[in-house]
Image (cartoon, rainbow, N blue to C red):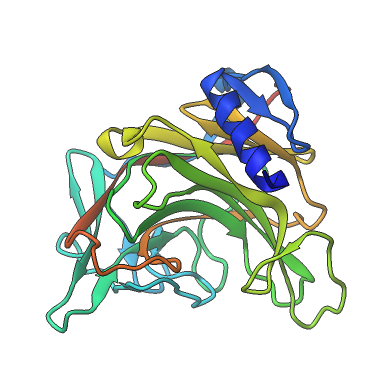
Length: 288
């Protein structure tokens, strides 16, 4: 069994036993429940309405990544408010992926800052989403946070509290990635991904009961402080990693329903839906 496979097996056992796995793969103490009394809200999106435009300014969300680096096998569409790809009913946002009249896939993404960095961002704190995920092969929903763009910075950080692949309904992925400025010759240690980024902590699979993420809503969160990045499922700790030294700037929020990620989409359900109850962010007001 490979080292990575062994770590994933340990992580699965840890989750089942209400334990968490430390960065070195060792089982640790009983999983900690997040203490919400030590947090103060700084950003609350409850989707009673939706303020979004393709690129801003003056909307709470934009519908593309701020660096214009859209990805996956479904184009992120400019929003038609209340029609596609975003609709709201009873305080729940629905992101839809579907084939258009030309047979090409389109879907939706929300980012909390625009290309000039205007909007919501925060360097440390707790970031959480409550969502029900789409099943089926080819679906690739995610909730992630990343450094506000600075072309002069040597690196940026991406933290993934949730990546889900619909063909694998008994797990989801978490991870921390350091993106190097291609003009900076220094290379950090760690796994080199095919896209040229560096994984500070390898993407890990959090094992869950099959279909539990697609049948019902769950919360996915991450707490970031100067020392630790701690991942939570339903406010129970599942994994932690040391905060990389490259984390020096505020983090903005992204959520999306993408397709593909190297997996075939010929059998992806048309349409597919991701449902989001809320996105909340908090600052830390005490030690936990």
